[in-house]
Amino acid sequence: MNSLLSLEHISKGFPGVRALNDISFELQAGEIHALLGENGAGKSTLMKILCGVYKQDAGRILIDGAPVDFRHYHDATNAGVGVIFQEFSLIPYLNAVENIFLGRELRSPLGMLRKKAMRAQAEKICQRLDVNIDLDAPVDHLSVAEQQFVEIAKALSLDARILVLDEPTATLTPNEAEHLFRVMRELKAQGVGMVFISHHMEEIYEICDRITVLRDGEKIGDRNVSEVAVDDLLEMMVGRKISNSFPEKTPLRDDGDIVIDARAIQLHKGAPVNRFQLRKGEILGFAGLVGSGRTETALAMIGALPTCRKDVSVDGESVAMKTPAEALRRGIGLLPESRKKEGLILPFSIRENITLNNLAKVAGAGSLIDRKRESEVAETLSAKVRVKAPDCETPVGNLSGGNQQKVVIARWLNNDCKVLIFDEPTRGIDVGAKAEIYRLMKQLTAQGVSIIMISSELPEVVGVSDRVAVFRQGSIVKILEGDAVNSNEIMRYATGGVKDE
Image (cartoon, rainbow, N blue to C red; front, top):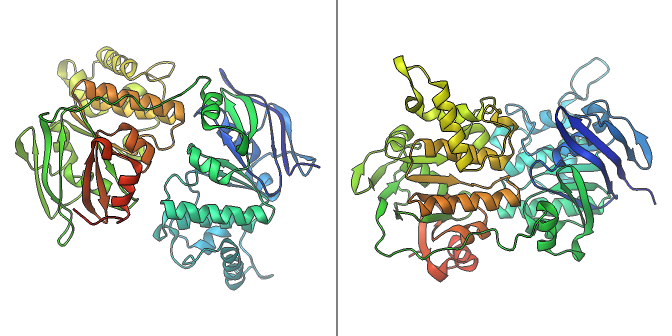
């Protein structure tokens, strides 16, 4: 029986880099096939070849057993290949119908738009997906999950039989992710073949049938999900055993210095008033469902969001912190959730990104930048956090997600920050790089740095945090420590399984 999709002996090189070497991959109709590998393993390159963005140097693509030649993206979509990228390709001010039919609008013989026909088709696709979307609202008014379904609807409107979903749950709530999985199962029953890319192992085991693992541009192997253990998959991905990616915790002293004492943070009138303390050398986790107020509370503390009431002390001194710049002067740095949009300037080099917030430190005579000194600082700090790159002149946009995160950390170390706020520190980062970020966080706390870690990944919260502040509906309902820092307790409080305390 012919496969729906076959990639045979695909190779691709870029100047100085062998991105893919003799990769073969098969997808059956009605199959959900996971494509796994660390960042830089070749997953994105392989999928860009599939959708016509790149042209392979060697090998061929077959659909239904027949060779195809994709010279550009439209060739792939015309052949029934749909790609839902991690970063959406929607036009924010257009509505869902306009986005679904963008560039291939239905028109009458006189060239008039057939708006009713397009809307009817969009409604039919949404019924197929079992989703209720406001088709008339600009898509930037829709939730992230609804935008995700608009992307899927766009692909299905092209009669896509092959769907590539790249980290589709990265910004979804658990309920939204489960809805997406229901839709994927329905599409599977309809014969659609799907390539699923995710760093979340629990999702792979919940939704996928088979797995292909890439490492350093090479295919390591195929496995049936039902026949392979998680540890074996991780070893295939990174080339070594990872028995425990979380560093060992050391007991905190009860009399540890209080670095931040947030006696009151209230975002607006009538909102909950949150209180917490951060001790020297600890990792305080902020846990809760998406939208529970974790990030908002942290941003309000450092002046990035307005507040109705705020009473915060740093090292025993009451401070206003009306702006993030003032918080930085107090030694508090933020690693934002969206490092590409808010944490880095991607075309800038590693050197420029590290020194960006503290140019006075590398200024020479006449306040001009001392390039030699700047390079020395950048090289020292990038080595300290183990950034993997040819040199510090490498554009940050060329780095993997894990190495980009390390550059942000290096920048705050260049500011001698004593408190770091990590917002979703390992989102979009592969399992090997996650272990490095955890190690680095532990190393920082051993040196006296205090960390607030905001994360939607329960294993991460439990494995890394010394104490956990659990949020629900904008309020810190419980601060857990010791043996109480476990998934069951966190979810009980986060979902309202116990009363507020």
